[in-house]
Image: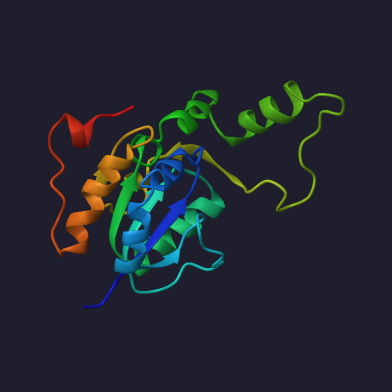
Length: 182
């Protein structure tokens, strides 16, 4: 049997979902025997998102041009895309900046109004990825196949989503245990 090509992606979020993934503890050893981890900020140093990915867990909202470019690449190269955690599902905490009304007010607030000794906007391109005017949940940008809420999703929920996929089945996302936000 071919191993599932698994990827995880971290967009605009706190990495709590990936920390919860690591809370799978010993099961990660079993999982490593059943999947090929082809891309992840955890346990991988691969720089470019590969093609022909079977399953990808995407953490975080889409907040800047880098996130936007990556999520389009992920969708194009992935069979089953899972919004992984509340930031991916709803944009959650990163979307609080949407209340400021666009990228320019966010940059002014962060770098000028709240600047310490030498408040100034970043001067060189690439220092700060170009912000989008609003942070979006993943499904507003690309099609999502499965939603896994939680801030972060508990390890038991992550396992309950991944295990059926390993058997070629779709996870059952019903009930509080699988759908609770926060």
